[in-house]
Image: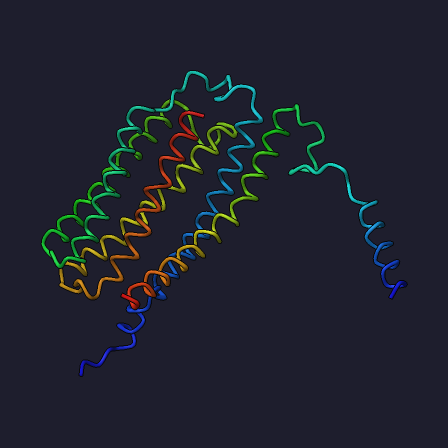
Length: 75
Length: 197
């Protein structure tokens, strides 16, 4: 049991030690003061948000239609 | 006892297959447009001068396009009212509103085509660097979608005139309305982004 705990602590410690301290949306954009780098950064952030928006809207619509039908059946 | 066909049974589900298919189609369209908007953001924010100095004398027709935007937004309203009309079985009003919506969509395309001719004559073409390229690709992609929506609406108008829709069965109108309103809602975002950013 103690062996397992020590092993997991070592694994987690190793993973934390190799994690970078800061993350940027665009790793290729070294200097964010340059206009093109800011452009890439905002573009990547914008496009990253779209799958969540799309799945949220489709999932929300499915939920709404089924909830409305369920409420109609109840009344 | 009334026997329902497979199609009617599908239509009576909380979310019909047709509506789900349109939602998925719109999801993929959103990804397409977000890619194009992402490219626009890179070019716009990456440029010190926008439009570039070589094209500084070319002004995008903001006023005419603004009026065109209002026409398209009105078409979204008339399309929504057309759907409401068929839900209330007001068939004549429904047909008239569909025709009005189609006409507004066509007027939008004609004005946009006229604008493009003016811009090309002034020297703004696809070859005018990233400014011209992203303008024509982004606005053109939306125009193709409006054209697709007009063609779809023409088919729906034909079906409406031949009496294929009623308050109980109008899934074709609903799907067309969802698509039309999507295309209408997308335009003001593109308009402010491309013409004012």
